[in-house]
Length: 104
Image (tube, rainbow, N blue to C red; front, side):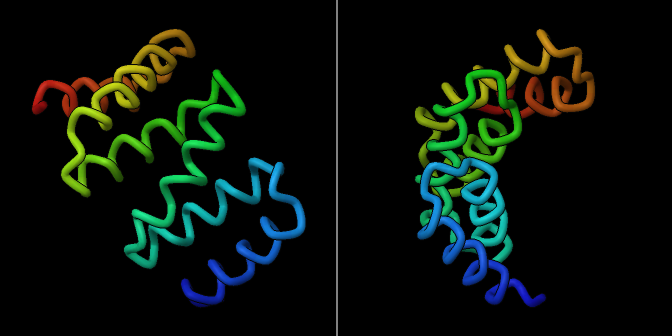
């Protein structure tokens, strides 16, 4: 499936089940693949807020906000993701997040 077809597919699923965080996460990934970070933000925020221990949407949200020049917003999400990486013993994401935060 091409990137635009993926976002259309997952947008339809989200329209049917807007509370499904897995559909929203998949839609956000598809939107990011299409370089549509601004459109992905609401879905990543939804995922992060729905599951307080879900690290990946926080990482993706922080990186997306950084790419959009929204450093202060990105920093808080990246710090939260780092906390989860440490708590969950995810060493590679921890190292990546420490590097991103050191550059802010």
